[in-house]
Image 1 (cartoon, protein in one colour):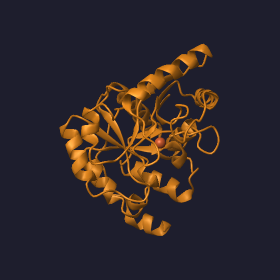
Image 2: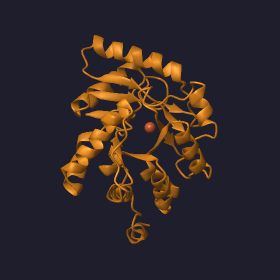
Image 3: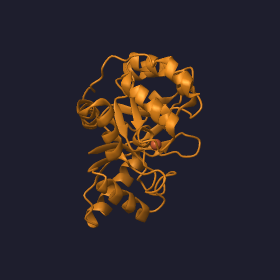
Length: 255
Ligand code: FE
């Protein structure tokens, strides 16, 4: 299994703090069936900055440690970039790092409570510049929960969406679990990833999430999501069904 979103690099953000914690996370990942993981430290989120070249060096070091300790987990470089107006400049100046460096897929994180007005224009400009934005965990964004059509519009215009496995498993509560299901049902989610920060409260649960999706939506959907994760690594186009609007009635029932 491939996990495209994790905070497994030690001491760079609010994920693993030490190399020992990274090793513990790696063991938990392997136990959950993960063999390839993208390290996506926070960048520009107000608390942490992690620049492309630093990430590349740290990923190499972590791979060396895992090899020395006989841990069967390959780490690839990536970055969880908080949306900012100069993102394209950041990519050109080699500050922002696409997933697996060469893929042209770029993680975009919104602030947890809102979606900036310039996001539509930025996503358009990113695509013109040859990049594909992947919106991370919109199921936990307050503005999108209140108005899922925001997300519909981004997807309609070419953005992709990654849900957090723990959201699908109900680890962030019933509302977020239900909303995650609605996004999957409306073809507004293309990827599942752990966004693991540790081995406790913010662990992996990828196997459990795929299991939930299998029982709700069937095995074909699990294949689509996991093949999309493979395609991200090599920069291939993702499989995406035409998006639908999330049915409002169900949402109103939740709040
Ligand atoms: Fe994250």
